Length: 112
Image 1: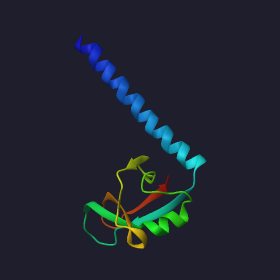
Image 2 (image 1 turned 90 degrees about the horizontal axis):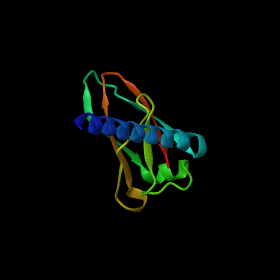
Image 3 (image 1 turned 135 degrees about the vertical axis):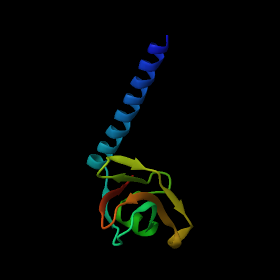
Image 4 (image 1 turned 180 degrees about the horizontal axis):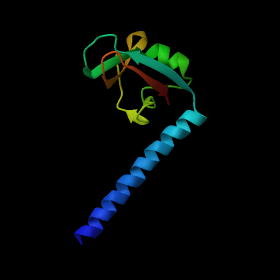
């Protein structure tokens, strides 16, 4: 019985992971996306570094982008990251976090 539950859990996680990857691929191919480059200019590791983008500028770059449909895709891991939009109007900011090695450059896509 435990083996059946374990196999079922692995299958569910695999299907969920594939669904997320397919959604990200579909968003890149079917929707607009804006490439972003983030660089750590220091010689220190930056764990869980918060990246802040002006949300008004992001909306200009990706037509139809809203607080409810915004997504950030990390190129290297092909993962959708957790995002948050804070503030109102022209002062609203799109936030996400990433780990950065010294001197590292990372590529992301803002998309809907």
